[in-house]
Length: 438
Image 1: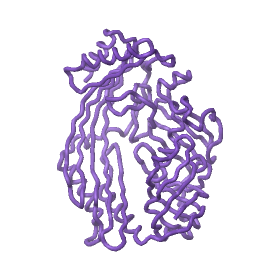
Image 2: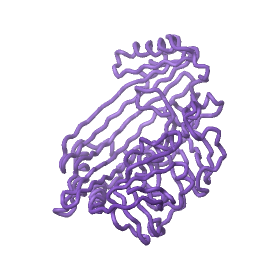
Image 3: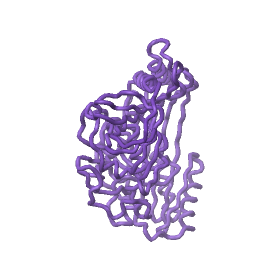
Image 4: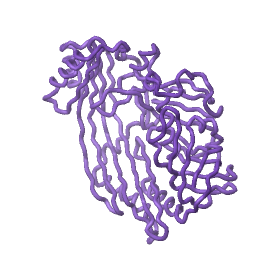
């Protein structure tokens, strides 16, 4: 792996690049798919490839290949595409080599050693959990187990050399009731280690579907809403995260332009982007262009502290990158992305502390949120009335609408149920005065 990357870097410089970086990936993944209470199929995939970014007179060219014999061609394409592009006056430089921090919990040898039968067995455990107790009237309509093991290498002409190895595993199941009123639900979990209770994933989904049967309708009103980590993370990712992306800010596509130092949220709320979080889904010693990972306070005691930068957006403003360059594999160039986005608020038993309100497990349609204004209107799924501090009657159909920045100001509580929902780490969050429409 190192020899191929070094060869590509040397070729780029020999062909006339002023700077170049190489992103090399080698991965192995296994998955088992669920359909109608059975394993539909299982497969193994191997991926290996290299991406070459070349800079000539401030212009950036890129090419990639997964064919070793085409490496020379890919390098020439990257350099030549840079030559025919106009120089970017905002380009500064690729990152330089720095001291890299240590991280923990990103590699589990047991995941590497898993065979296909073990993967199928863990998928079956989710089905068994969903069907715990005979004749419970639950059908696992779809789902999957997956595990992956990968290595990547980043080299550039400024001395960056980063090599990392990591693992991950995940489970997902979607179920529907087959007796009485029809209701659906899902649950999932993801980890860098083999520490997930896959049976419990099935149990959780089945209980939620059964508990959502025979829902009632409610009249439109404003009330306290408790958003499960699944629901809150979807809204944060779609309605808030785009506003702190430095690229969006620099292009005028954010309502947070020029608002650093302003109080945006409840004084008890902290939001941190942390590429060093132990066991984090997006943890690593560096970001995807070789900038050392770090912990960046985004909101601190309600005050807006930082946008998120990769090297390019940081160079445009003359600031340091926050280590948030992210790639979608070897076939893409870096862009700004989240790194373990952590929501912190004093935790308590917020359901028992809520006299009346609504509890929402999941939402549909968060991707339609206005990424500039933060406005959203979503369908709430597996929602329940809260009465006198207890989860009570399920709600048949419910829409919730609002603005993400108003939500952050109106947070009044957080639960004890912190979940890693992909790269977002959050407990359930209670928000006062939200509009709900039955």
